[in-house]
Image 1 (tube, rainbow, N blue to C red):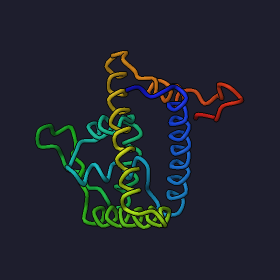
Image 2 (cartoon, one colour):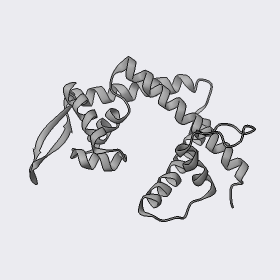
Image 3 (cartoon, rainbow, N blue to C red):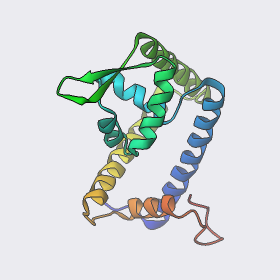
Length: 180
C-alpha cells in the first residue's frame, strides 16, 4: 500500500502547520515561563540518565554550542548539577537537581493541562488514534532522518516532500498550501 502524492502533500502541509504552531507555542512559553525548547529537552534527557553535554547534543540532534548555552541557562536556574566524569576527568556529567526534577514535573503537568484543554470535546479513543498516527509517523520520519545522516538514499514520497518543505519555505505552487 502506498500513500498517494496528494495525500502525502496534505500530510506535509498539516505537519508544517503543526510545527509552526508548536514553535509559536514554545516561544510564548519561553517568554512566560522560562526555559523550553532545547533546555526542556535537556532536562527530559537528564531525567532518564545523567549525561555528558556532547552525548545530549547527539541524542537531540543539535549542535554542541546550542546545548552548552542551554545547559548554562538551566544550570544558573539550579536545575542541573555538573560533576567530573569519573571515566574522563576532562569532561563533566550533567544531572538533574531536585529543583530540576520538580520543575520538569510541573512542566509535564502544565503541558498535560494545556493539551487537555485544547482537546476539550474529544474522547480518549479519538485522542489515542491521533497519538498512534503521530507516533507511527514520527518513527518513520526518524528512520528517514537517520538514513539521510548515514547517506542511505531510500526516501518515501512523504518523507521526501516533508524534508523538502522543512529545508525550503518557498511556496512551490500558488494553488497549493504553503508547506513550510
